[in-house]
Image (tube, rainbow over all chains, first blue to last red; front, side, top):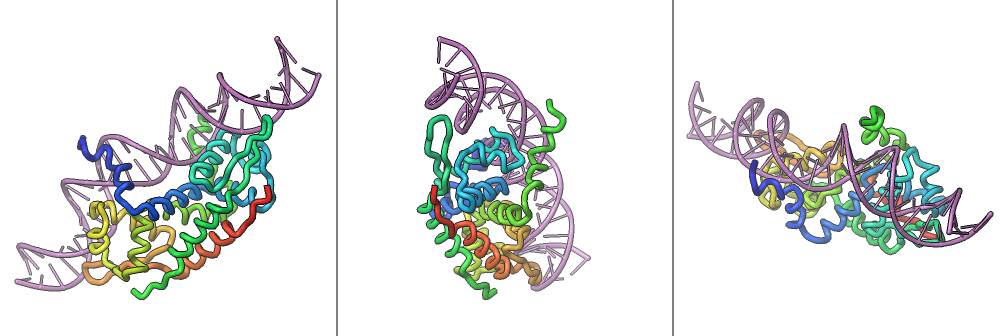
Length: 112
Length: 112
DNA sequence: TATTCTTATCGTATATTTACGATGAACGAT
DNA sequence: ATCGTTCATCGTAAATATACGATAAGAATA
């Protein structure tokens, strides 16, 4: 039972540069096939309602809602309230920023 | 205590398309700032040895080794044994594939 | 052969993620 | 005012992730 070790699992993440942390956070939001699928649904098919997405995934409504929340957390999507429904759509600004940062990460050459 | 619910947390991931699952898996490998940092170190500075990476991160050797293993798991990096050392470098093929798949995901427009 | 250096793996503790059903809140319609 | 629809949140259980120190395994060196 190390007193310091207990908090480290989270605290260590704060010791990295903010850009690395941001990109890692976006990657985390994309780290589940359901959320990849949701993002593709929102862009490809222009379906917005939460209920529509639920029908397209093999997951319960509450689970889909959780996944939507995670995508919303990092700003990849947004949800606009429309009466009792919620219309979801992707946030192009964040999408472009993510694309730019991932490109910077991937456009390198190994000379090792 | 639902008997089915117990296994679902993992099993559900298998019900998605393999491309979505692959991309989610790569995103998972990138979902920690330490691993973003490691990838940048391997590309930017052309430092290969595990020990060098350990010195550049606020993490223990065993933790860095675990992060390297995760990046290796999805093929983003590879480790070539060089005597007692291990020379790590990025795998350009996987990097390019990842870039392509992320681009497909991000190059969309919201018309919602 | 013994020692040192380098890295991976084991064991462990805690935090987080993923999934579900149940419930609650907000709105529109009857 | 009540009811149905839609979605978020709560509570919970199991799996996974993150971190560490300790230890093992392999190669080079003394």
